[in-house]
Amino acid sequence: MNHVPSPDRTRRGPSRTPRPRRERTWLASAAFAAVPLVSLAPVGAPAAHADVVPGPGSEELVERIEEALDDPALEGATSGVLVEDPDTGEVLHGDETGTPLLPASNMKMFTAAAALEALGPDHTFETRVVAENRDGAPASVEDLHLVGGGDPTLSAGDIDTLAAEVADAGVETVEGDLLADDSRFDGQRLVDDWWEEDEPFAYGAQISALTVAHGDRFDTGVTAVAVEPADEGEAVTVDLGAADGYAEIDNSAETGAPGSEDTLRIDRPTGTNTIEVTGSLPADAGPVEELRTVDEPAGLAGHLFAVALEEHGVEVQGGLQYGQLPGDWDDPLDLAGHTSPELAEVLVPFMKFSNNAHAEMLVKEMGREASGEGSWEAGLAELGSVLDDIGVDTAGLELNDGSGLSRSNLVTASTVSDLLVQARGTEWSDNFRASLPVAGDEDPFVGGTLSERMTESAAEGVLAAKTGTLSGVSALSGYVPAPDGGELVFSIVNNGHEGSAPTHVQDAIGIAVAEHLGHEADSGTAPLRAGESPGGGTECSWSGTC
Image (tube, rainbow, N blue to C red; front, side, top):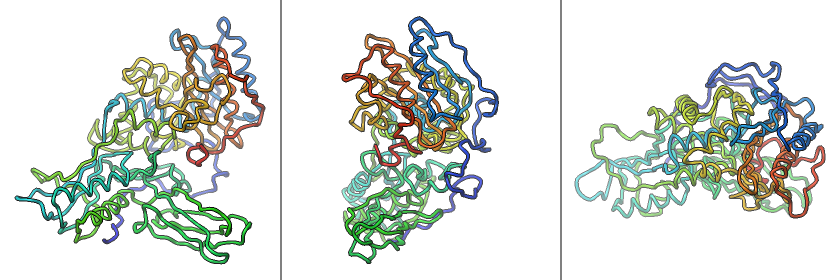
């Protein structure tokens, strides 16, 4: 089977000269491709403070929030913070609530809510295998099309099942080519201002309507690269996993002496489909497995389908190509099909583990369903329109992607809070809430990115919120229900801090809200001292630490 040739695809917008991450400013200017929903004041403008007189009984809560925000970790930073009662509209605490800030992965809440409204919780994604309809039994077909339907959860196992169905339909020979069809979405693979140095990592995967998901968290457009030491002085062994036979290997890494420094690096240089392994791995080190992205995810899906067809006894005489299903086929022959789980179920790994690719696929799917165009431009326009329909005040929003990886997105704490309030009155409110990470729950499919935060505190198992982390940007927004009914909505968006994400500050505020509502920790509130923060520069799910 020949390698699929690289198509002429639009990878991103304007080119950039990469600089080391740490030299970047924390707030990039808005790119030209951003979709503004309203003219915003510049970030450097004076802060829009909200003068809030604490309601009865909330003075202590306000004092605790102010104390948390006075942490040295936030020196020089800007923080939008809002705590309100969604039933009465009472604001218990507000600070910088109208200041435009980068949301990081808090942007995913807007995408999830819009997708639930626009597509519906029961929306599914269809992957098809199609050939031209011939008279008689299909012992042979001309070309065979694997047609992507924008499924974020399509696995290698699903592709194998599709191949088995083709064989069960009686097909023995494909006389022509196997064509990977990802035309449901456009050919732009990456957002214009995503950083090039993020491209090898799972959170920076290329977006395609035909892509393969890895593992139970459904990381798309990636392969698991496994590296093991050999004898001292010899090259390490590298296994490309699902991409074996699709991607290339450039392995110059050696096995070091037992106990030596581990300098192993696994990369995919920009613009290539080559996994580059360099450095040294000690002879006594255990196996290393890292997820790395591939170039052109549809090609990997097609490659896996070709391998599976061969294993099921179907001979493909041609090569693996990209190609759109011919529009002049009156009655195409559907040989196999796969239906994804419903959107409500897909949202769980998407939101719990802050999956960027899922967000962008949902944006493009919304565009495709609304206007027939699976693009960021169409999808973001639909996202904004749907938010308006829900009743969200979008005056504080500027959108450039659906995941929050772009540094051209802008939100306000007030807008985030308004989204959370408006979502409560929708038919899909329970689906939205169920997708949010839950503080301190050790089950990763419940706790998600909050599994190891606020443990043994009044917020454990109670607070449900979306995290967000980029270097210099951190956020936590969600719900805290009261023990006897009612709840509070909160949003914390920190920008411009140095070093690790100030998650300890956010956690202190979350715990204060939970205790204000009457929740108690089983063994007392865990101490949170200034400067103690496990947060890094990205979501913990992106770095594999949760």
